[in-house]
Length: 379
Image (tube, rainbow, N blue to C red; front, side, top):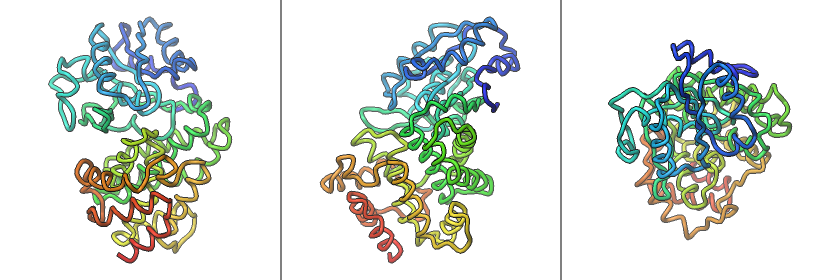
């Protein structure tokens, strides 16, 4: 469901599933509740006779403890459906709420790829940011003992998504930038993946085109509804691209976020130009194709895509070097080991090994993307 004001029409989806009343669980973060955005969904539902219970304990990097608390909350009443509302963290946690409402196990028993014995409750996702694409995925991200972890399985995919751009017009520029770059990283990494298909390529190229055209206008003027509508759709399309799997960039991003707890989109943005550089020699034609798309021309050199992404990061006011987020060369060996051992990416087109990663991280410390390009084109 898509359109301005669509958040007020969740009732139509529930009635379409023969849920004509009863308890509904709304999962959100405190900022969504503070801004009153939750009422955009809850008020029409209550007027239609539903009883809405709000769980607003979601934070930017939800922990295992938050997930367990939410699972317990979801079992307190005979909920008929779950609505997730907010950024990627709230949407991901709503997937767990729907699953653990009907299944008694602890969250730790389902870390990694999993299946649930009982079908989750019907789940609707209503994003209030434009970038994570969580509303289109089968994964729930959480932090376990300070490290990224996942619950992953097709049963987690929401039954419906509501794209209402009006919910995003109050996003601050910094969040607009971070979430928009998250969408771009999904598109470009999915496009580079060895598992890319004609289906995911269509989604990836659509998302790239949207971000190239509309991210900066949305960042510069949050009230630009044409840009907001484009970006919320682009984020959803970027989420579909994740069917191809992400590549090295997300692994590098996790090693950054594990040390300085940056928003996911920021760490993905920082890793993206270096990931493209890393893969220049493996898939030059494909990277040139992406460069043509975002630059609006033909015959682009593959390294032009690296430059374009790097310049976009600067234009959006995001950090482009590790030293800007207090990560130094002394952290590099541990980050390399963590990247290789904890976050392997067999979907990456170029082999991932410690020696090649050493150059990626060392150049990233100072933001020397030119040296990274020169090294990977030569090696």
